[in-house]
View 1 (tube, one colour):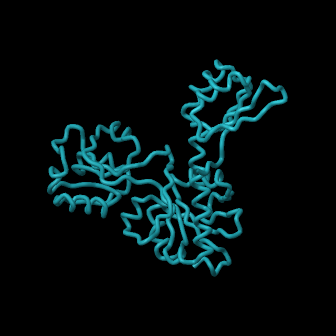
View 2 (view 1 turned 180 degrees about the vertical axis):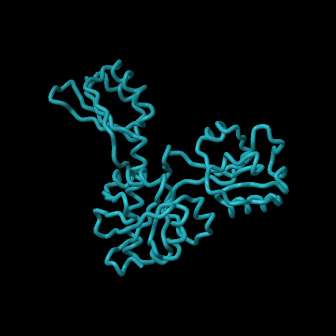
View 3 (view 1 turned 45 degrees about the vertical axis):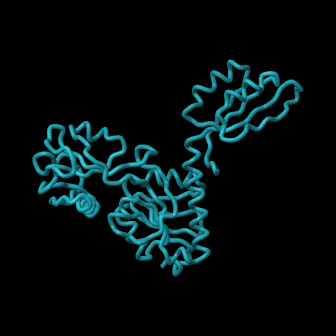
Length: 295
């Protein structure tokens, strides 16, 4: 266990496609993690933390066994491995976007397979064999499920009748002329913890603090800060145009008939808001990024 090293927590970090977005997320949360190109042992600027990079598919097992106190992995791998761990919080981020991913059953566009029962006695390729077999069992379907090392979509229809693959938007499947017939599991990244580690107060509180900061960093990606100046006579129309997270902060300026307004708005709407604010008398409009937002 990590206590023998003098560190409070041993953290499992995902190697592969999640590695860079995970390091970026930790950076926004206030943790600097240094990584050597040839090392699987990152260096944390927090003296209470140590860790190691491991494939996301394996992290839940190492957390359950107690090698890691906590780690980041997909909910799908917790289910696939049948790992007895605590899912502390959901962190919706990935290599490509901040949306929930799905494991889906897909077949060629011209396939006669239209629903789950049509897979009886068929062959399916996937990386999540246990998850797929469980789903088929729930629907009373018997089919041959084989493990796929990757590039699963190229195996139909010549090698297999159907695949179970991970997708965010479905664009890759459509590009390969595949049609989704059902969703097996929706998944996202989770901060997970070893059950025994969670029983130790110092570890539990440290994990809780890390969860708060990671969630705050993710939430901040949805929002931006806005500052502006306006004549007080225009305040009503300015405030009506602001769909703020909270009530805006209004401060007096040195000129009595002027005020400064500061607030937080969703990043996706700011391009619509700024021209409206300008048209309603706002001046000196400043947009700035946020590192953390805690509700």
